[in-house]
Length: 408
Image (cartoon, rainbow, N blue to C red; front, side, top):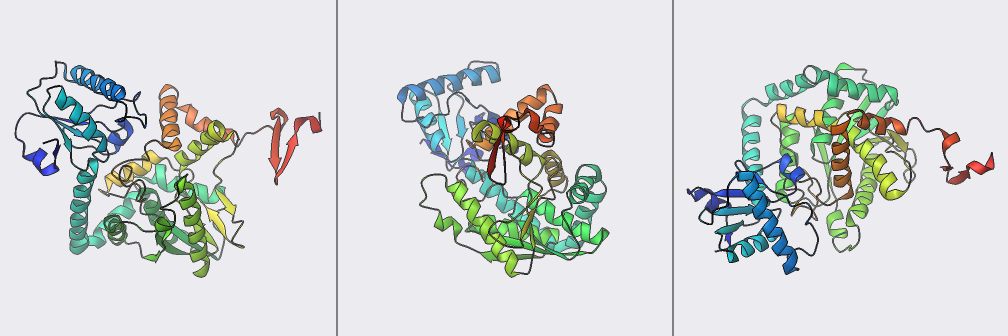
């Protein structure tokens, strides 16, 4: 039998080797206990599984790395269980290793089945928290923001609001919640700001359901209840609308979601929408624009909508590092959906970060550079604040391109 279910793998009481062949970054987000992560980075072609030569090369590299990791020659008597994103890649590898005489199995459905069980356990635990003493839990979460995470989260949040003048008297702000860690934290920060700061604004906590599966949607609802966030939900059919788009459905989906958020917010009497983009999103965007867009630009802390008159977009998490958000999440024992998009839920929503995307590549590159010199991240951020037009060959202003020869 080539495939084994999660229950069958766990019922196998023999000495066994559980190998997670997902990307190292994905594995670092969440992994099965006692598993070994072996990622063959140089073999990630779409032709994998089609080319017999590529499959053979992959399996040999996998065996070599397992020998290196375990410090011994891999025994053919020890069962191997392989975990990939969906079970498709591990099927191919397990089949090849079995033909080489190894007792190797592919985990049925891949990491999805592990994530599904984790989500179910979380939902059950969340229900218990809400039922027993949710008021105290909410107070503890809120206290953590202004006490334990005061420097890294709370002060960075208020600094961005003041430095970029994100809130004015009389604002009615739609705090847009996708269900991930960033937007949920942003909602709590707005609640704290209203509680401890000037009450010169109003908030609506807006959740759009573009077609989430039932489990992901339930996680969002349960987290909102658990954290004491009074959300207002509206439904769209965006996932269905872009389901047949062949090229770049993510771009179209993002544009459509932004449009729906503006429209719904305006209907609710809001003049601003708040999105949960953070510091790391900003520096990643700067490098992506340079390397793949051939341009120098940034993700602005606020901007006027070009399609919805009188509406403005603000990013109050602009100065908060993602690492701090993750620490806040883990400190409060919270679980959030990663990416609930229908097109990536076979991989990225199962603990992933959008494997194969340009943003994931940039995130990895910045991490490597920062390991060599931590100042690099700050310099990327500052680079778009220190543009010297006298040393720029050309630039655009209000859609008009200007060349240095104009004033040379």
